[in-house]
Length: 247
Image (cartoon, rainbow, N blue to C red; front, side):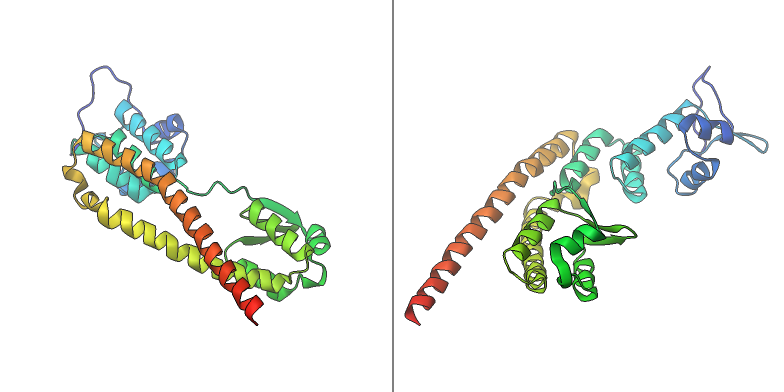
């Protein structure tokens, strides 16, 4: 169904609209195929686009910059066309999917790696680091996703802990962290986000309250995880000490 043009607004051909939006004509056509853009007004074989199309393209660009996928953008646009508060839905989606990690990547050259790990820097240890998802290999070295984890690895090796042992513990810790993350996400999903199955029925007020609730839960989850780890270390260290003095 063609949209109604607003009287007196400027109209664009495909190439002109793409240029005004800062995208290629091919991208514009792709958006049309994905039904992200409203149908144009047609005069014979000529398609004319208006300011509403340009506004939509700018919204799509902003959402892509904020990390939304095209599939997610399509859902938001569909909700908006159904009368939902798109701004509220975007806020809810951002509250749910915003990154939890604030880690800073760090790049190390091969010379820096050899200086830090010496002969322990082998194909095996490098492959294990890559397999854990922390390291990407580049021509002039590697990039680690977390400066803190890389600094801790270097300090442990400097204290005499073999790199292979550090990586083995890292893999186990990652598995336990994934299990804890699964426990928290299951709790939030099952107890709080069940209403998202009927998102089209949520009022703007309900959407806002749900987004605020998710934001409040983030620091609570971190506090619980930190407390659980500290208590677990207390229990484990006490047990190890008793075993040591009783042996």
